[in-house]
Image 1 (cartoon, rainbow, N blue to C red):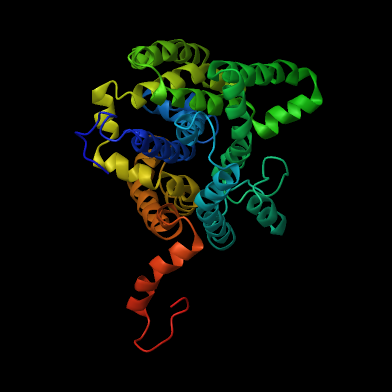
Image 2 (cartoon, one colour):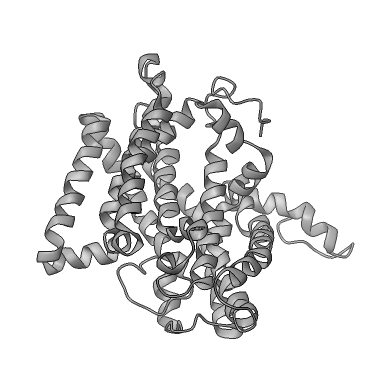
Length: 390
């Protein structure tokens, strides 16, 4: 990747500078949120001091991830007239990208729960959990939870199936019409849900509000081929202006209200996140883009998926097995947990990604992966021994 000075999108029009930094910060925020929830158990954001309360909304990082996912996946189709070169190839590449690290993380999580320490109060996963989570249907089929962070992976995989339809609506009508259509359906479900049991089940299980964030990310991707009149808009200021009412509302109503109305809070964030992605795509404000493109954040973003997938079992084992029985809850536990868990989860995720994530980014099929692995295997296989695939 290029250095921090190369922030103008004209340097490489196919690379959006700053996206890796956003992913890295979002994944790190999720880790800090789960530490926060264990340092201040129960209604964490209610009892936590003001300086730490901002870490109480782990859901915010998830909606950012979902919007960034929609944005990133739409970049290729946007440059091709809002079309996939091949829907089948898109599906294959998505499966190749997300499933190997996800399945490896599922195995790691099960080992940690069964052999090390399970989250107190959670149902211990069983064989049904392996099948349900392995097939990514955990939002539709209840089962013991091996890793609480996995809930959003099923939602995201289902949104991949929705993407071709969203692109079709964009081609036939327009990008704003597509986002408005998705929002209309989701808002209708949200309004009727409390009164219709079937729709209420959909609200609880499938979190349809995330479809709006995904659609907003898709719309924001259109900025890369928009006319200069659109690209030159102060998207960063628009994002700030759209954020202020949400921040004020959450601050005034409090954490308890926000948790009870998370569906509507997610939707309220959508315009701000969409505008922010448009601002990053146009490399403004440059100071923010440069910060997001610094080497540590780029590096963290490169394995943010692995960090998201693997941190939870480590947080549980260290929190309940080592720290919380010995350290007073609240600020003392929080600082100890941060000091131990942030480097531990980041380092583990980096090693995990090197084995289960990054190779599947670099090599697009089993043949290429095997060919790349042969020189590595030769270093460890005694001379004269056979190597499969030679």
